[in-house]
Amino acid sequence: MNKGVLKTLGITITVDEIGKCAVEMPITEKVLQPFGYVHGGVNVLLAETAASMGAYKMISDDEIAFGMEINANHLRAKTEGVLTATALLKHSGSTSQVWEIEVTDEEDKLVALSRCTVAIRKKR
Image 1 (cartoon, rainbow, N blue to C red):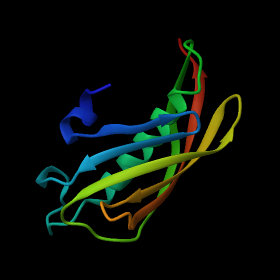
Image 2: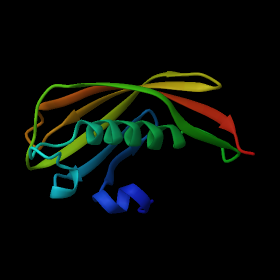
Image 3: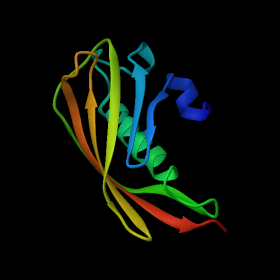
Image 4: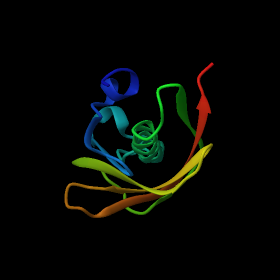
């Protein structure tokens, strides 16, 4: 799946397993805020992308998954390099999943910590 925001920002899936998903993105000028640092919203976008992609791996063809709630703690500022968001499933119910996501840099240093609740619904 390489379209929309994934294509625009160069986000790729690097791990795609049941209960674990990781996505990677190079830091480019497109994702910097006016002061030259990665915009905090980009960390959140990466976290929700990893959680949502992980959720899709676990649902049936007649279901859809979408982010319902997300929070993030931004722990380290970045101006260049590569960011990786790794989502681990913490709860899987019939209508929701909870994922914990670590956003790390190319040196495996923690950049952001996030939790995302994903809703699971039948397709209409």
